[in-house]
Structures are given as C-alpha cells and as structure tokens.
Amino acid sequence: MGAQKRLIRTICLAAVLASSAANSAFAHDTSTETQEGIASFYSDRFQGATTASGEPFDQQALTAAHPSLPFGTKVLVTRPDTGQEVEVLINDRGPFVKGRIIDLSKRAAVKLGMLRRGTAPVMVTLLD
Image: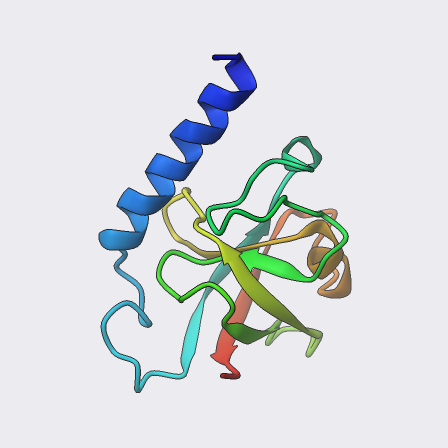
C-alpha cells in the first residue's frame, strides 16, 4: 500500500475514533444549536484526499469537518468579531487539534477572512 493510501486510512481511522469520543456541545445534546470555539482550515495538501464521508476533499467547496455532527448537516459559521459568515456542509471528521471545533475548506476560510491567520473565533449554528 502506498504512503498516501496509508495516510488516508490512518486519517479515516482517527476520524472514526474521534467521532465516537467527541466531546463537543453537539456530541450528545441535539437541543444545543450553537457551539463557540476556534475554527481552522485544511491545508492545500489534502486536496483530492478522501474525506471520512467518502467524498474527495475539494478546497473550493463550502465544506467542513466536525467531530460529531452527521455528514450532510448544514451549519452556519459566524465570526463574532467581524460578523462574517458562511454556510458549510459537514462531510468530514476533525479537527484533530485540541481546542478547535471545526475545520473549514479553504474557500470557507476565505469567506470568513481567516486565511492569513489560519484560525479564528467562531460560532457554529445548526441549520438542519
């Protein structure tokens, strides 16, 4: 098996484990509609890689990774400090960095004005 396939398999396994052990506001309480925390975005190196939902990652799509929300869930991600917002579809698991609540595609990060810094405080609101 090639190195890229091993990496993808490892990422998918980590996503499944993180999903089952997720400790987010959405993990067990579906009445909670908003979660606050730090967002980050995927680097270009993941372009075309298989997401946990089985779709290829497209940095130009408005998608995101979340530790526990079901695939296909739509959320509104808002920066409270600037008012910028973007609607994204959850199609992957992550983030895998402690303290972050959502990983965004590059296009979503651009819409939130967080590309240069790489992270931003956000509110994630369920739309479904």
